[in-house]
Image (cartoon, rainbow, N blue to C red; front, top):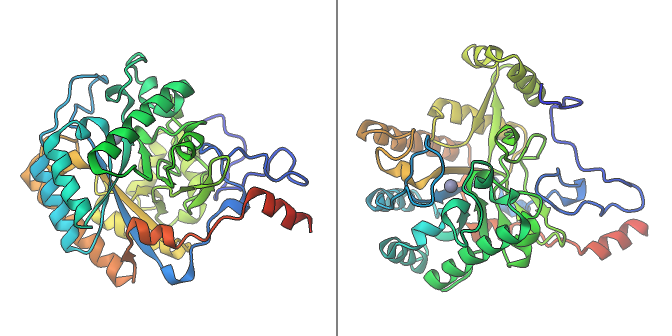
Length: 370
Ligand SMILES: [Zn+2]
């Protein structure tokens, strides 16, 4: 087992140390499930929509130890082809972009054009091992920016934000930590730096065995984060599918502890955990996952993948031309299914417009007292 106490099927709202008088003991950090009042109810006119975030980053060997220098930025044609495909499909991707990409003039020129013509948004993506200042040791543990000392995470985030500002003439408002490495200070730092949205929380995944965050028990719905509750968290979408999906999380974790049981359940199509990405997830499973999310009332679906996947040979998911055409075939199936289910694409701006203003912390306390 993972040393977890009671198993649960859904996320449980944060109750706080004193859930009676002081409901605001929650510091807004991204590693704790939000308080019930911080869950965001999207405006009704939004309907049910999906967003696409692309982790836009250098190519490197995903199996090798992290390195400051062992990487390249060459997959521009793939990126261009991907953008053309998504634009034609009516999707405005959010390219959360990391430092090595911003150091490449050709990448910046290409993406600046997309931003200028309104066909894409650019956000921030932090790979601490290749993002200055270079002060920490390069280790697996230090690949999760959120668990670096606060001043190091802040300095790296600032360098990344400023570089994006210089490249595109506007500071980024959306962020995803590399390796989903949000930590206890991340939401506060993002608030300080004027970010409006974080999408680092990968609910239903636990990276703590690898020194990373544990998102077990986090919700799939967007919620307010940060001490000021001015940051919107939009978790990545992951569904449980299969005949036993109702008991999803608890059974999944119980089976995980029993090793081969998890694979057996998936093979028998009894229970699978399906993240909404073309990377390593068959289209049929993604379609089932979309249905599972819609059945449980999800109003926003958050899809993602990594930019090096857009050219053969850079990630484990697209190793040759055949797998690249499978990648696009995956999108054909998934986009057609989303359309059939009435789920339209949303731009980042459309999503933000659907988030009602959060009452100030003081206002809410007064409300509750009245
Ligand atoms: Zn990344």
